[in-house]
Amino acid sequence: MRLYYDNAYATSFEAHVTATADEGRRVYLDQTAFYPTSGGQLHDLGTLNEVPVVDVIDEDDGRIAHVLAAPLTAETVHGRIDWPRRFDFMQQHSGQHLLSAVIPQPTLSVHLGLELSTIDVEADKLDLTAIEDRANAAVFANHPLAVSYEDAATATGLRKATGRTGTIRIVTIDGLDRSACGGTHVRATGEIGPILLRKTEKMRGNLRIHFLCGHRALRALRADHAQHGAAVAQLTEAAREADKRAAKLALELAAYQGRELYAQSPRQRLAGPIDESTRAVANAFLTAGPGRILFTSQNAVLFASNQVHAGNELKPLLAAHGGRGGGSANLAQGSLPDAAAVEAVAVALGFPVVG
Ligand SMILES: [Zn+2]
Image (cartoon, rainbow, N blue to C red):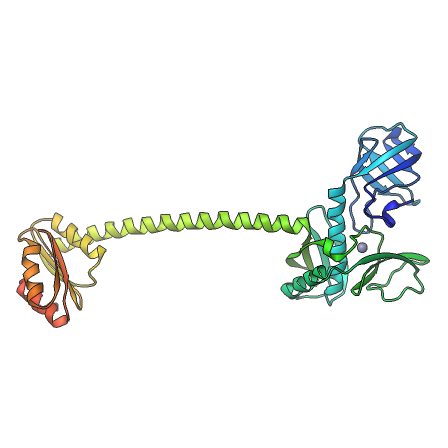
């Protein structure tokens, strides 16, 4: 007797040993709560009298073989199901029925794996977000699930026609789905927990959807979150390094430009923005030898010299033309009201108009 058929929540049970094989490593019972690999759902793990059950097989003659890690010699057994594993399978299996019900296209096949589960759907394109929303809404609605036994010939409303005859087991999600199935299911859709659609892949003209339910979905989201955090930290660090390197290169370039300008002439006037790189160029210019250099923009000037006191030269000129600013012996700068004032200051410093 298969106890899981009518009570998927039985986690322990008593049973009589009806037969053994393989020197007591293969045990048959008069009743069992152990689910054998079948219908796409993986077998349970657990113990019989504390001996680990490593496999559960649905044999052709209808018997269920419990494959044990060590020989068992007993007439009666106390069985225990590895509940976290079983409940995980129940979440995935009920989640699969629910998904197949809310996806408009027919489900062609199903795989319920140890880590990942998939549904193959007769479609070449699907709106995963819309399906995920519908599936989770059905979870939140907490539809009850029920098991019934009906005659295959007269059972109606099945999502997929069954090839079986006689009495069939039907799993119904109230208001959503009726499917012939021998698997273990949760009591209501709320127990499935969150349903996450991870990705799709093309499979021979159809679409394979990878999905996770319940604890698995939660674990995956948690892992994603940690991974994204680590990736962001890594990118931020890389960007910081790139910025540092760019700043260093800019200074190196400025130093090179300053020396080049000096090589052309120890007296230079250039147009350009007055900023950090301009100051770096001016400083490099002065290291090359005695000279003077002036940068001008629309409303600012920068004057550098190691022949005259730059600050003392520039400050009164700025004041005379409505500007302000000042500086040290080698480098001075200031702002002026307009281009005409800039030109007047340049000429007073002994620089002709930029050509
Ligand atoms: Zn099923």
